[in-house]
Image (tube, rainbow over all chains, first blue to last red; front, top):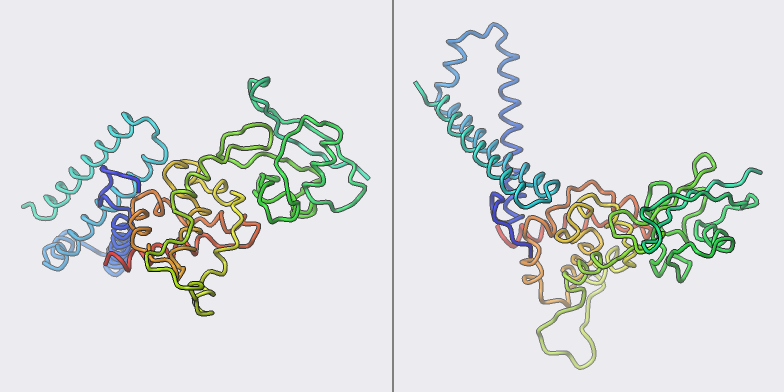
Length: 115
Length: 236
């Protein structure tokens, strides 16, 4: 057993499952957005804003944001443990990454729910 | 007939400040020798070259090395399978400390093997004669027990190169599954709990280098997938 405290789920198994589940959510969200843009060539602000006013779209978007945050945390944490061998540099990098993910997540929610 | 150009990795830590490649020209007289035969011919001329060997028939796993960029056992690899443009480059297994020339320090590899407790554990009273297995139960061990621990797979794995102290590696994980799959072993839960961290099993990215190089044709990636399935079944 190798102990880890800066990865998302504290367990390799939960990180692994989260990585796969979030990938599916992100794939579906991407397919939906690309499909929507292709099906609505003359898209204007009203239609786009109307889409994001729907409750289901807000749930879907929030799910995608949280998935993106989890996916990025798991993925980038893995990259730092592979390539950054100095504990100080690795810990600082991991902290910056986790903070950035948090900032982007709150920012994304504000964009979605903000006036 | 032109002689085979052999480029050999040389390093003697007591006299060399850094490793270097030494060139040899070997007259194979057109024969399709095994790479080990070639090394023996070179050693007759230059007795200072060092490599491990024992059974010379792919059973002992001593002469794992990197031949023209691919890991394998020198004793069962014919020149025709690896030589390109009449050239052959021989290096030690990648990622492990070099003791001398083609001889590597297998300490980390064995440490990871030791970690998975590679022996049968059973806490039920011993039967009078032996623990029986049905033919179906025995079949589950095929493709697992044949590993000879030559380290070709683990030293071909980037995940093992980056984290040899934490990632068990394909060879160790194949053996971990060999005991997880054994109907006579009762330590399944303890074994699984040792493996669920982010490194031991999950550092495997499934690139299947292990499968590509295994001289015994085994499939550690599949075994790792089975361990993941067992972990998932145990934890959901």
